[in-house]
Image (tube, rainbow over all chains, first blue to last red; front, side, top):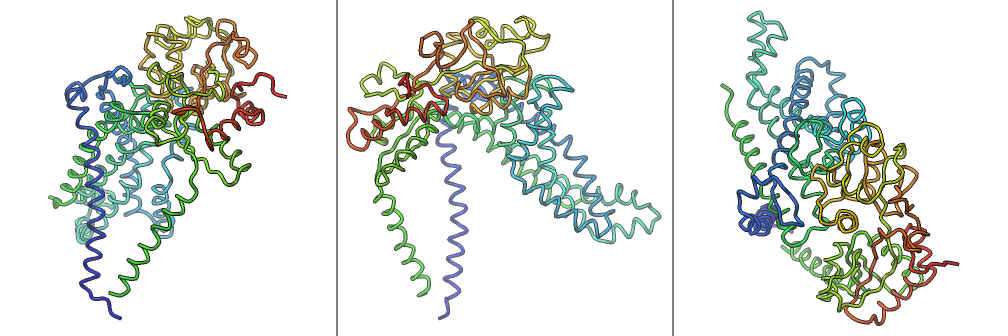
Length: 282
Length: 268
């Protein structure tokens, strides 16, 4: 017996709607739990307060906002040059035989669970930093290095897509005008694919800000304003991750409120990425 | 259309059965402190292997949540790693074991012994260098537990009193994570359950008293917290039989092996 197409359409619509419904439900609960606390503490004291001592009713997340950006900035400092170099190599310079091995390897990088990255960072990177650079080792530097690697697949895959999507005439034209291969890459192809590359970087940034497990293990989670890259820090996500186990009442609401801040940051980044990738290259 | 209907019906048919299965194996629920949870799980497993018809569900959630669950009737037994507050005193509580907390440092540290007030000054951030305690000239890395942790609460009460733990302290979210950090950092100091102290870290003497079972029993080492089972009234039925088992010498021996301080001093 034939199933009418209309029925299949409706079923698929229902399934599609259910994913949006779940998103709406999550958003609703985060806001429902978090907003009352922000109003009680006061938005200014919550966002700009420098002390987080839930047992005393102090809920200032400013150090965590700052730390989140420090760690992300650090990750981009490592991730962008590495990612861009890797992209150029993969899309322009790599011999096909190596490329077939390279691409899956990079995609595999994205498939490694973050707890493994965290464990590796804790066992390998942290002692190295403590011995050679000082401080406790559990630091923004260690977190940034690990995150830098974690965002590589995002940056590389999206940037490579952007480069490969360019019309072949760009490259042919540049070469015909007498530009060397490197000049073509650096002066023609990269600028032309700029918007895609920037979108990749911003999505990588979103991944960096959202990373939790690895950061709980590496950052040290101290709740003070970081003064250097060798200081321990706590990001917005790790604050939720580390304290949710025992939090109740106002403390729990404060963690949801932390989630609201995170929600807005991620929304802003994703909107920016969508906007940039839609805009045509000049 | 018929296929759809069949699917829908079969789902309807399956679901009540899943729910039904869970209901048919009714048992008692034990909820609360995540410090007690692993031990309660162990005891529940042992108990269920002896009495296969019973079922004991063990859940975490924290001491306060566990006590709350007993009051509201969501759980039969609450687990608490702290003493009951005045408002909770009307509940029925059984101490199933005690847990000593040890101050630990890296195995290579020259420090073996610290007076309580020095420990307080280290954790509040007044002493920041090992030099001031007779150690090497190196900043101290303090490691603490996260806000809300029962271990942290006990530490706050026993050591810190009114003072705050320095906000610059490294925060780890389990006993194991604290031990991991301290075992690899020669300049770190922290606190964990005595039962989890191993050869990777060194437990400090506090004002000359070595943390060990003997000193806990004779009352010299006082940094000890109770592990309680809390009930809304005198235990009856399944709950009573489980608690009787937990207090039996076999179960207490099990707890001793796991590093807790049993309530029975002389175990066979």
